[in-house]
Amino acid sequence: MVLRVALPNKGRLADQALTLFEKAGLKAESRVDRALVANMGSDFQAIFLRAQDIPEFVADGAADLGVTGADLVAESGRTVQELLDLQFGRCRLALAVRDDSRVKDVEDLEPGTRVATSFPRVTEGFFRELGLEIRVAPVSGAAEIAPHLGVAEVIADLVSTGSTLRVNGLREIATILNSTARLIGSSKVTHDSFKGPRVAELVVALESVIRAAAKRYLMANVPRDRLEEVKEIIPGLSGPTIVEIQNAGRWVAAHAVVDADRIYQTITRLKAIGAEGILVTPIERLTP
Image (spheres, rainbow, N blue to C red):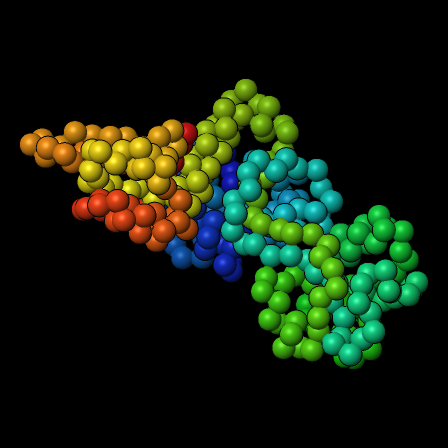
């Protein structure tokens, strides 16, 4: 039995999802371009849908699993299980007003303030929890123009860097939610005696790729009499692996998994204690 995985059909989210699955060993193979379905190995089949429709398909059982943004899952209101944070597609749903607005904070908003957004469910829920009365003006896109046309005083829109807001003369006053891409499924699938174990295996595979992206494998020849310092510099997952070098005398080889964002500092510290022959390579998958 093949498990159906709903993937976004276009955009950056689609490209990153396909790349992640391919690195996990599940490349989507289709016979024609722009196909609606594609095989991913013998156990999984990709079906390509609009990202906002994926929670519906998963909740209704038309797809066993799906990849979409946490913001879209929340807006759908459907009951699904979030199985894994895929750590791409990072953005936030932010509230923003015109630069010349006197509003500095959410608490400054008057009762009945109009908020333009394509996320009415999440936006209404946010203000309901705060006990503030607002009026939602649903829009399908280009919310940034709403305050300038008098359609609404505030917008709730997705932002990543905030540059689009600034270009359009808007400034943020609050964040409603933070979002990344998620692997989702239904409880029916995860508790199924046949599908459940395959879902668990997929989660482990994807997680190993995500974990590896933040790490590098480092090898270096280090002085034997500086090993205590080496252990401090490259502690690795459970300490560095020390390997004897044939006929090397005072030298040994140290191998360790290190943080990718600390490579510069790590190499600098190793060189300072006399390390030589330092080699750093990417890691495809990392499972503790």
